[in-house]
Each structure stands twice: as structure tokens, then as C-alpha cells.
Length: 169
Image (cartoon, rainbow, N blue to C red):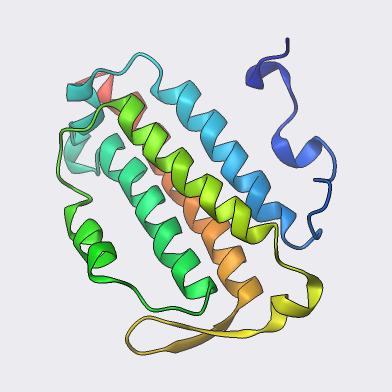
């Protein structure tokens, strides 16, 4: 059976059946994040997951932030505002303790919910207006999907760098 390392990157594995081509990049991004984070955090102890190498954010923070920010942005994508529980999670993203496995499982659960919602989107919905945050800044469904993908990848890169540094301190 092929391993993620032996496969091409998700975006080179072909179209996702039943998913609009403008929605697919977000789903490819989630899969890429799963694979890269599993690979580059393999073998890290919980202590290493939460160390702040050279003052940078810990791997644990980035994993929690990926999950939390995806959840929050998907709330806006649905046209809703954040709940108090989501705001509480945001404030706790830096708190250490969870293991690598717990963090990856929590991230995967959020990705699965986001993928389920994204799979329901058709071309007509992509240009629907949405509002972000208390200031209700304007965007669209497609704008949110794009930002979710790029924001996730930004923090994946930071988590990978933090993981490499955590092995050296």
C-alpha cells in the first residue's frame, strides 16, 4: 500500500469526485497538512511539542491554532458569528499539555467537519457575501476558502520549522 511519502502531493492526485474545482484546493490543503504534520512531528515528545525553540511558537500552538482558526473561519463561512466557546479556545491555544496524537486528532476532526461543509458548496454559493469578526469585514465564501487554505499552510510551515528546532534544543 502506498505511503503518503510515496504519493504525489494531494493536488497532483487528480480531481476530487463531486467537489467543485474551486473548492478542491482547500481540501487538498487539509490533506497536505495532515500528511506533512504527521511526517514532521513523528517521534516528538510532548515536551518537544510544547517547547518554544528560540522564542518561536511551539509545535503544539501551531497545531491547536490550525484547528481553532479553521473552525472559526468555517463558522464565518456558514454565515455565523463566533461562540463564546470558540473565543475561549482562541485564548487557550498557547496552553501546553496535549500530546502530539491528541493535537493531530483534534485537527483532523476539525478538518473532517470543514471538508463536509466544503463538499456541499456549488459554484453559485462561492460568490455569496460573508462577514468576518466583530467589525464584520466583507469577504465571500470563496475568499474564506482561499484564506483557510493559505492560513493552514502558513502554520504548517511554521510547525515544521518549530519541530525541526525542537529536536535540537
